[in-house]
Image (cartoon, rainbow over all chains, first blue to last red; front, side, top):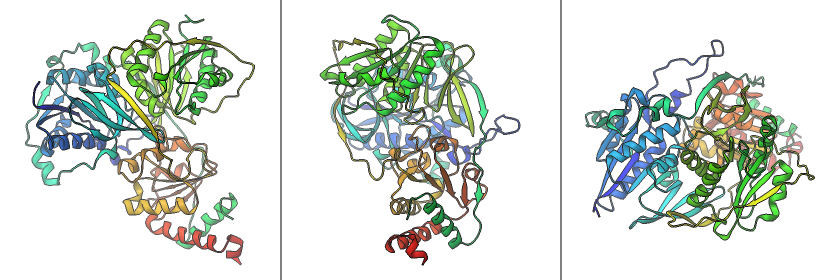
Length: 269
Length: 338
């Protein structure tokens, strides 16, 4: 057995969440505006990378960061290298565009195949933009690995039989899993390290590998929009059914107004 | 009937011996879709000692329940559950499969979908059939509603949170067929749930709370968040949140309201530092009175509530909490006014 422990961390470059909120369907034209939103690493993927970095502190490990996205997503992969990952791979090809969670997971799986034998694959629980939570578990199916989603704590990480705690409704489950395996992590798993602004600028100089569709064992009909079972059929504008009254006056008057409303609803006496 | 193709399926579950409410709600919606399509509703349930709870499925609209009743099924087991459901689905070709957005559902749904090579839509807020009988799976996005369809692959799979669909009227005269599922012979179990531990939910449960105080990114910092928490405690309200607040680590995922979180319908909803993102707002459409506190007068949240207060929550909330505490100490508002 290879003495180096091989970890792959999947990261996604997402539109900066605050700025992304400004992408709104136009009530008149009913179309989406085209805005140039800066990309950043998906918040929960930082937790996934942090799991890998902390594992590497306890055993000889090699961390590969992999992302699927347009060329600018390469900067996010470079930032992961600056944080301590050993190798960065960007899966980027116009043929990957329009992928739903299924096609994304399939493409990532074929990218991970090319990386070589892997012990552990780590993902964030969900992305801030798509928020489906599907990529991690679907990736596990396409890699023929077991998966544990929503991991909040890695309890036992020695050997090839790991124990983790994973969130469930009102509690958690203790799960034993045989490696190689895929894990998706929540924000409770750790506090990720961050790069300073100058660190982010320096990271831009790091080298990463870019693979397109011809570099992977991936037929064109399995990638991007063509490989996506789901499609968007329409986008509908919704009108608010409520009419808002803005409460004017001093701070005290506004407090009084709310107290009145609470009393009217019977929530205070 | 047991070989019926094209049926509408619901993947039900048990958590510590209980059937989650969402399972019954989605059987109700499955019934509506199945009636339009003129096909049966079939429910899959894997658990232990659960036979006495099946009537509820039939009352809610199920025609067939595929029941796996075995000690091995007491806890959710990803590998075994996936294998059973996938092999049954391959035999029977359901056209629609609905799964509750519970923690089990959120892991099991993508495992089933990827194994069946089909699509999956997360956390739908409505499910309707288009003119061709294709399932329109609606999710909020970009301040509007996206309709997602899975035009060719089957089944069309969607997850739905509790509270999206109402509890169906239960017809106690309905009954149906129970078909047993035998536990498969396993060669290797790669992933095993050893135990499930219950944690008492902190604070007031969101779904049944008369008052909900929800906070968002506008809290600005953990200090701001603590002010929001203090308001919730003073009002004896349930504490809710938006995704950014969860991602900041101020609160737990369990408090998240909206499309991929919980659905609430309180008497009063108070949103503090919330921007009005539809993913959150779809979780509170059932609220009677909605109040927003936000320091940005242009915030879209003010287009979606009944009363708006333009103030910095870090200044406004302490004043409000003080006043509420005063009233409490004086034993009620009447005394206070006098």
